[in-house]
Image (cartoon, rainbow, N blue to C red; front, side):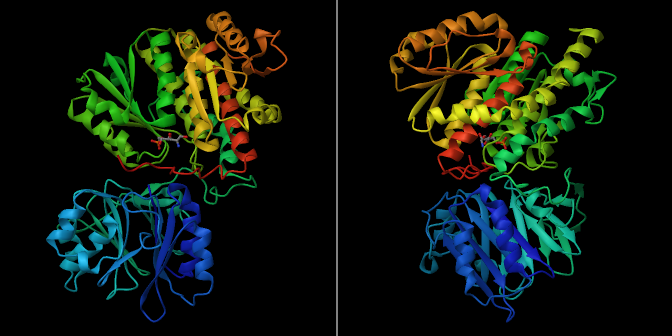
Amino acid sequence: MCGIIGYTGNKDVTEMLLDTLEMLEYRGYDSAGIAVSDTDGKIRIVKCAGRVKELRHLFGSSQINGNSGMGHTRWATHGGVTDQNAHPHRYGHITLIHNGIIENYRELKEKYQLQDMLNSETDTEIVAGVINHFYNGDPLDAIRKSVVKLKGTFALVIMFDDFPDTIFAIRNVSPIVVSSSNEGNVLASDVAAVCQFSKEYFVLPELHTIVMNRECVLLYDLSGECVEPDILTADWELGQNGKGGFPFYMEKEIMEQPEVIQKTIEGRIVNGLPFFSKDEVTDEILKECNRICVVACGTAMHAGLVGQVLAQSVLGIHMDVELASEFMYADPVIDDQTLVIAISQSGETIDTLEALKYAKRAGAKTLSIINVRGASIARESDYVIYTYAGPEVAVASTKAYTTQLSVLYLLTARMALVRGVLNEGEVRTFISELQRTPEMVDQVLQKRDQIHKMARRVLDARDTFMIGRGLDYSILLEGSLKLKEISYIHSEAYASGELKHGTIALITDKTPVVAMVTQSRLKDKEMSNIREVCSRGAKVMLFTRESFQISGMDEWSEVFELPDMQDLFMVLPASVALQLFAYYVSADKGYDVDKPRNLAKVVTVE
Ligand code: AGP
């Protein structure tokens, strides 16, 4: 969950580290710190609880200068949010930052008698103590001897007093990527941070050690053999990382959706038909599976719910959608006829990664839908389909979700074709509707002021409900998560037909209700359920489609008309409307929309 950066080069490392930590804050922002190899060759640490801006203020008066160093933003796992628990940690000759969880840190503390020199409550400081224990002047030897003693996940970035201008790093599960250019050598916990000077990068292979200084970047395996890295190219332009003039990344990323949906689908449609040949996804895997199971978390799981509706209504195939964190404990029935699809924006969510590994061990074929090239989940999968959403910085996922959906529509169409469920003409009709989605999403964006006005109705609410049936219910589950995670209003998405079986007892004239009515065959029943809550005094904000011509709502209700698409495709404009709704509630409440409390962009702890 934490943000990590290391740099050696010709730049003033302090500014470079602080600027990058601000970019990485979405990965965790309880506390921050940096270690710099000062001009006198000493490694100096400055760290504090709070945001990077507090750290920058702390640095303001210091005279620390140098060209090598490392930085860390923390999402606390062991030990409270305090200055002492902030990273970097120092033990003897070792200075260390860490992302992950060391499960056997107590045993290590006892075994190596570390307690007398500890200053924090963290597992990280224990790791520094272990490396210091094995250090006898050879950093690589000390690192190799130490990591085999660790149980758990780690991305470690290490500096040694005797080698102040060299940065060492090693990982197990938690991510580290590396880039080398004339502007300097960089390692970081994600691609957006490492690709500041070059689009070329590589993923640090697990249990390999990077040795990085101004002159070179060398990669060693556990046996001490120097090996060549596999170079990848980021699929976005340098400098695409800024807010582009928007107040928050989330607004920028919501507005980018027409473009990135287009970018995700265009290369996979030839003569009106879907193709995954460039992704090297074979038709066999799409034809031979007799069961599909999605494993994902949060918003990615909600994308899977839409995929489930597509699989069942278009393909006539049953699709399970499992919370990745629950999957392996539910004793899932998996065999070599099962296709397990992992959906993940970051490609580093450990719940999803572990679920995928479990599925592979059980014999399933695995396909992942990922936004970050070369991410851990991608490398673990038999097949990968990348979304082209570009860097998604806001903790609340938006454009990743709609591009994941775009891939699921394409996948459904390809499966329908190769399994003979739809003929070419029917598939072309399906694909041509998908090709309308960028324009339909843009139409919603053009009406965002109306959504902003609706959002003001819930600013003071403590609880809200979001009600709908079928695909509308799936849309609302995602819309409800958006509202919860950035406005802190307790929002509950509810199948509206189920309300009368108990939960409607909670509906009062103080309960704002968002209703979604986009599905032709469900419209009448959904309208009845809306009238049920209105009759109990609820204020209803209705999202529906122009062609439904819904009127006669009472004076307390507002209606937002979505552009018309075929029922199955209404998910995209409807979801974007709810993203905007949540965004405006959070922004108008004065919250830091991009960095909601308690959250981090990438969840690399189980
Ligand atoms: C979504 O807004 C949340 N930030 C969160 O639920 C996220 O979708 C989830 O953690 C999965 O992340 P991933 O897509 O990177 O795997």
